[in-house]
Image (cartoon, rainbow, N blue to C red):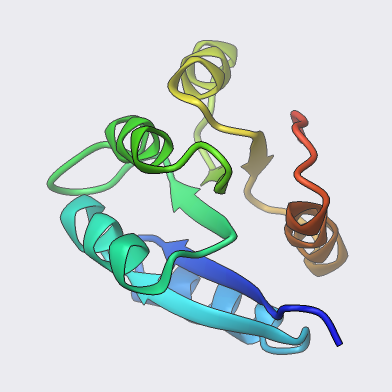
Length: 128
């Protein structure tokens, strides 16, 4: 039996955090949540997630700032930027900050699970 995948869900909207956590609950993953940038960094230090689902627009620190900080701490953590308002510039800035993938809201539950499962293989991709 392999190691369970650990996922950190970071979004300032409690409904979005709840929906993502519920969807991930159908998989055998350990789930942690955070509602802003500083809380995300604290949670990442505490639980050392394999995958971080990170909202682009957060209070306290932007998702880009959080992404850079997460990648500086450990580059093998997979960061997936999740947003409903991404432009091509946002995507490029996210990739430059170290994001491994971009997932635009709304997305299908199956698409989300596919992206998270990719964390086991360390895949880097850009998803619409």
